[in-house]
Length: 399
Image 1 (tube, rainbow, N blue to C red):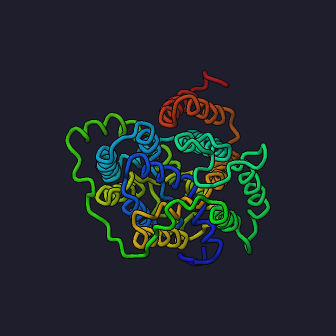
Image 2: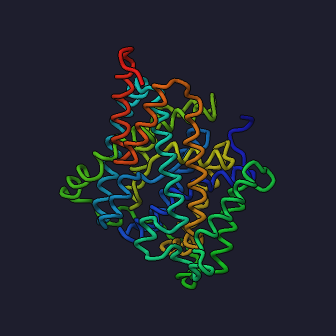
Image 3: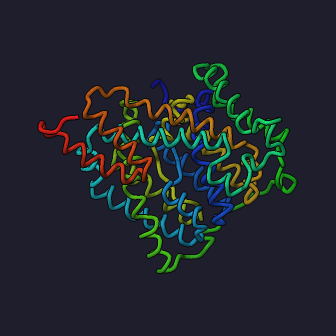
């Protein structure tokens, strides 16, 4: 890699690649769980910039999906979510500082890492398709496939399917185009579509000003909040975080960036996420992590240096500081189906990492993990896949 930071159109396009994962959960937790929009966007922006400067390569910033999905599904209150972030911060600091993460990574078979990447990739592809056809949880709760567009269909064809199909074809056409990067074209094309046909919800209330964040905007969580968060959110999240956001993410970063990714270690990833959740806790944001899927998204759409982190980080910071609580009015200009296109291509990029596996036993482990993940969740798939991989080391067992 010639330079640590580049700020060209490819880095810009790559910086937008993971919005499909980030925005839906962020918007859902703001609307349903009443999280603070400015604090949430500010914490994301700060983490993008800090992690990019430290690691020196593209670094994804994602919501912790188990916590986010369950919090939205049960309309959890902000204090319980803040408590989960604080507890994850403590857990990740302990795991990182005691080097438990390094030991886990060293003894995790490659087939399990690829199984995590395959499973995460397929989940992202499936969620992308749901965004296009209007069946994601957020769209069901909103009772509309495109909640912020005035038009829901053109004749018998749902508008989301039409936008998603056009966006997908344009992405395929431009995916290797360096003069007109697919990520930029699709995202800004989607925003233009939102400007022309959008409901413009609360856009008339936008006022540029300086909005400074509140520290602990919801107060300090109670003991009951911490107890509830530990059992309902944190314990289910830990295996998924270790499998996808530490081991699979760190290995994929090494695969993409080689020696430039020397700081992206299992230990470094844990401590990095601990700091992220500390920031998020004090600003009233959502629990944050890295993730192999997010990295695949940034990379597929053009990110090759930490410049992409500074670009997207400054976008989030600018929106948070100058728009405050009205930041959602701008975010809602992007159609859900465009987020679906980003997810679909990010997921397919991640799932294709299994192409370097040739052994039947390794492929068996990866596909069993995929099946278990689809039937239950990634945390269960990771644990069972880990045990299965070691069982299959025996010559007595064949597949």
